[in-house]
Length: 149
Image (cartoon, rainbow, N blue to C red; front, side, top):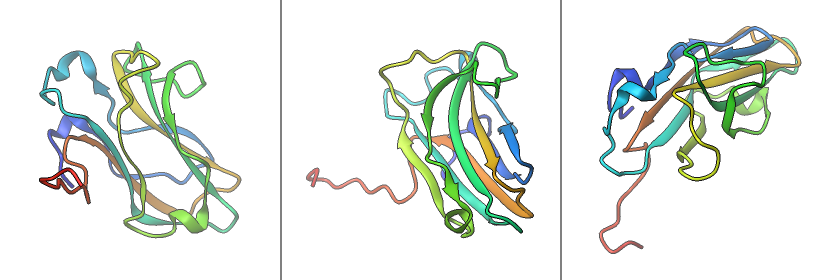
């Protein structure tokens, strides 16, 4: 992983198994981060750290949220900036699977001070599974070509 700073890491092998919505272990306080990206795009990367398993047809959905308080709400009152599709168990049952890797939207809805990632387990509980999520200016598998092609 290509972290800029440990404080820009939302989840490090965060276990997600219970049917419900949960916020990431760490919430980034954008009021204290400063100008660390120097005008470069900032990417959200979310990956499966440990394969998910379930006795049922469990699903996982991921959402990037911001809120005015450090306890980012999972009740729909926080500002949503991106949401994955609902992923079936078969999709997230592979360690290393990239759920998201994209530049944070700079237009549209204004970001509130605190930024977090919400994980929602649906349909059935997971018996195992962990995720990693972080912000970076150097996403994995990204290649800069000198001629722009």
